[in-house]
Length: 106
Image (cartoon, rainbow, N blue to C red):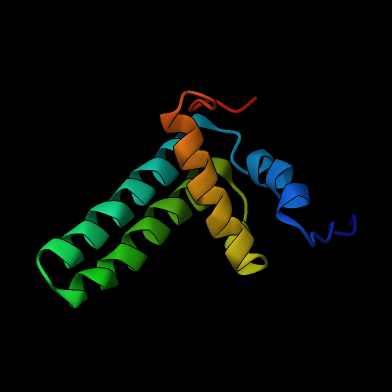
């Protein structure tokens, strides 16, 4: 079994992140989850309801894990690199919105 790469910077990590999100379905599930995150945070703020922050966390992880376990067939990077993975989710999300990344991997 090959030894797993260790990442100390986000710049090093992000190509790995993209490689773990090659399939269109995985990117779509992440996009849905991240959109839900922003929607629930907005509901928490506008509705002054902090309980909306619970689904703001659960919803995106549920969608992302469906993408990883059932579509991509890999283990989410969140387990080993939680903060870099979260940053990767947001970066990919905004790159898709800006048209710099698509739903298909490179």
